[in-house]
Length: 318
Image 1 (tube, rainbow, N blue to C red):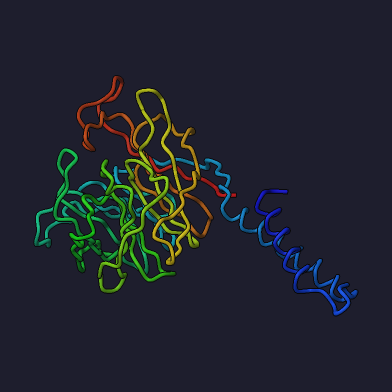
Image 2 (cartoon, rainbow, N blue to C red; image 1 turned 90 degrees about the vertical axis):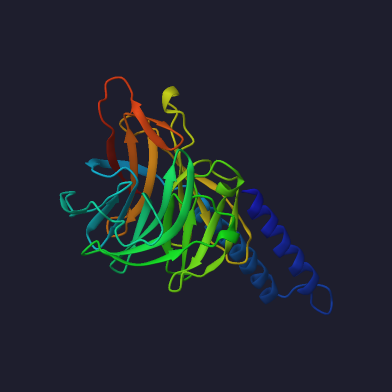
């Protein structure tokens, strides 16, 4: 029996001892049955809670080379991939069917970088900014038509939030909001930033504990936020990680759980975006290898590489 189950069982039994006595100080047969039922229910609830917070099991199903180094998303049988300056659409067999190489033509403020993306109801949501050598400005949320890849609207971020970079964006339809994450290496990178999905109005931020480092991607699924962290050292063959935290509007700090260690990729490099194929119950992870990354930007190549390779790893979830 786990500690939580013991505590819940003891509490349930104590309450029943105080409030469940008959006039003579003894319990009837019905009262005894009720006591056993309530204690059993408390134990079952504790077990269900523990099961929901435990990491899933992920089995590598396949990997696919793509043309973008930043993010991945899925909707209605199609995969969407973002490069720093591109958006691409792939069919169910990972064949590229469309690419937009000039996604910044309609922005008022200068931008040059797209991070991890999400797709919801036929629209691509992207965190966009001007990024150079670890510093960012002009942070905004951009929405593109998933069919044409044309920009339809943008929302500027709230400067008072303290956010200094946007590495990814995720739509949370259950709570009607958009979550933005940050790659920043200072304390501002330890927060998730929340905006209204329809209006783009800033709704607040949530601190993560412990806060993952160098966050690259974000996705929402079934009440949980999943986060990719570039916290491994590729030079030492140390893997990056996926973390998760439960969305709870009543909390100002979200406990973070380690969900997966990325020790089964082709070669250690730089983790990026994350998404889920909900039809097949699969997790998608975007990963780069071959390039030497300095302050978030490729600066030459490792021995044996003359270009950076971008892959999406597909994991069956159990």
